[in-house]
Amino acid sequence: MIAVPAAVIGGYLLGAIPFGVIATRLGGAGDVRAIGSGNIGATNVLRTGRRDLALITLLGDAGKGAVAVLIAGALFGPTIAALAGGAAFLGHIFPVWLGFKGGKGVATFYGILFAVAWPVGLAAGAIWIAMAAVFRISSLAALTSAALTPLLFLLLHQSTTGRLWLSAGMAALIFLRHDANIRRLLKGDEPRIGGKKSPSAA
Image (cartoon, rainbow, N blue to C red):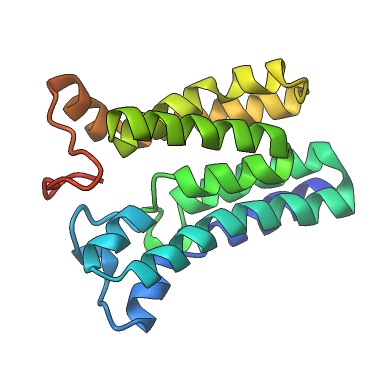
């Protein structure tokens, strides 16, 4: 069956597009991997001082996940769309072009959620906004939102086996990619939004 390999390969290649690296280089801000935490995501791109490049990175990283899901869904149906979304997420975190050293996946995670089940995407985004507003810690907001996403699928009646596995798998990888942030959270050292950031903060 051509649908599965096409969706997985296509999704991975879309997800592996390093928008942060491309945006900073074309925008004249250098290589984002040599700045701040070295992460290729929008948060680290913002440390270049270029909000426009950070916005481009955010939209690109979210958009590639959504596009992978929507194309696969239109061609092969919702189950294959979930596979494409998972592949895009892995592509972002482990891009072949960058030696499999990619981002933390949060923006791509939200893009995939909106494309797979927009009510869940909205709810997850609302949780991020609420947590960020109360605690002013971006990583805590992302981790809380990711952890609650499988439950959101169930509560909002958007759950299928594929979607639950997809959301749980992405949430687990987000936690793994935020290991340093979690250690700082436990120590009370994680920087707040708008505050002074440590060199290793992501």
